[in-house]
Structures are given as structure tokens and as C-alpha cells.
Image (cartoon, rainbow over all chains, first blue to last red; front, side):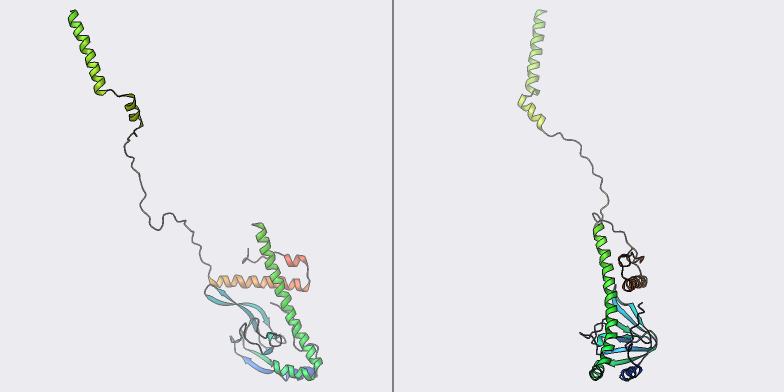
Amino acid sequence: MTTASNSLLEGLTDEESSLVLALGEPLFLPAGIVLFQMGADADRIFLVRNGRIDLSLPMRIRDREEDILLEEKRPGEIFGWSGLVPPHRFTLKATAPVASEILSFRRASLLDHFATRPSVGLTVTRNVAAAVGHRLQVFQTLWLREMQRAVEHRAAS
Amino acid sequence: MFMFLTLLFVGLAVAAVACIMAFGLTPQEREAAEAQPVLRPEQKLVLDAPQFFVAGTTEVPMRPQVPVEVLLSQIQRHVQLEQAAAESFVSGPSQESLRSRTTSPFVN
């Protein structure tokens, strides 16, 4: 699992961080609850405070739908960046495997806050971009390796 | 005596002509006889017992179906290995880390 730090607040002063955190709505998730499904509309971004969030890819195996775990998000890490990035649809499924506490930030609230504090908006957006960029690079590499195997298989037959 | 021998030869000649007329074949008849198929005793075919819906089909060996849990475990392991390889490439891009072979049993 990826362990890249994707803190939403990295680079902000303590005061700036406090103001952003004050926008978050705490959510307490019981173990096993699904927070969002892949493809669902995304109007918020999340920060893990306690516990753990599993991000998985639903896959059809025979006649069953199974979740393939891709990333584990731990305290301090953000997830659900699709809430700030068009087309605002979650790209994975999020589940709390254990009782967890998260902060939920509405897109509208964040954008209003950033409108009055552009430097904060820039820093947070850069942090989100880092998370998106990391995902893109990892998945592009996965795809490249898969294609390389397919090419070798085709060339050998 | 001479009379007897004369009658004997004439009788034999008549008998020979009669035989030729009775049983002899013309060349045409002989060719026709040769052209006719020779009838042989019928050969008896020995057939296997009928196997409807089975005969002519290729027998496909039955492969035991891998349980979903085992398959899921293999996929999960494969994703972990591939993701680790991808993370390694992202942190330090190189042709070797991009093309390193996987040990995942899912694709081997």
C-alpha cells in the first residue's frame, strides 16, 4: 500500500491550519461502513483523524463483487480528493475497516475560504495535486508494466 | 473293326460339338462374364455400442475450479506486488524497475 504522505495542511502555519480544520465536520464511522462508492458524486474531501480508511477497487470475480484493496489511509492523510477535482466523482470505494474518525470538508466551504485567503487555497490545492499526481504516476506505471507483459506475451507467441 | 472305330470318332466329334454348343462361350460372352462383379461373401462389420451425444466430441478435461477466496487472495497479492514495483519506479525511475518481472503467481 502507498504510504505517501498526503496531508491536506502541509505547508500551512498553525493559525492557517486551525482555520481550515475548523471547516471540517467530524464524522464517526463504525467498523465496516462504506463511506462512498466508486463513481459516486464527490462534493467533499476527507482527512483521517483516527482509525483507518481502506480505498479499494470493486472487481467482479465470477458472480461476486469483491473489493481489491489499493490504499490504506491513516491519521493525517487526506482522501476523496475528487471532491476538489473535476469531474467530482470518486475514483475508488472508501470503507472504514475499523471504527474511525474523519473530518469532512465540503467543497463549497473550502472554496469560500480560499477565496478570502488565496495563499491558503494555493497551498491546500498543491497538497491535493500531490495526492492526485502520486496516484496518476503509480497507476500509469501499473498500466505500463501490464502493457509490457502483454507485448512480451504477444511477441513470444 | 474299321466301322466301329469310324463310328467311335464320329460319335466323339458330335459329342465335342454338342458340348461346345451347349456350354461354350463366345468371346463377347467371355468378356461380359469377366466384367461382371465378383460376388464375395458379405463382410460383417463390427460396430461399437452407440454413444449418442458423446461420439465425435472432444473430451475436455475438467479443471478443478479455484475457490473465489483463493482467487481473491492471489489478485490481492498481485496488486500489492505490482503496486510496490510501481512505487519503486515512481520514487526512482529506471528501466529496470519499470520492466522488472513479477513473481506474482496470478500472471505466472
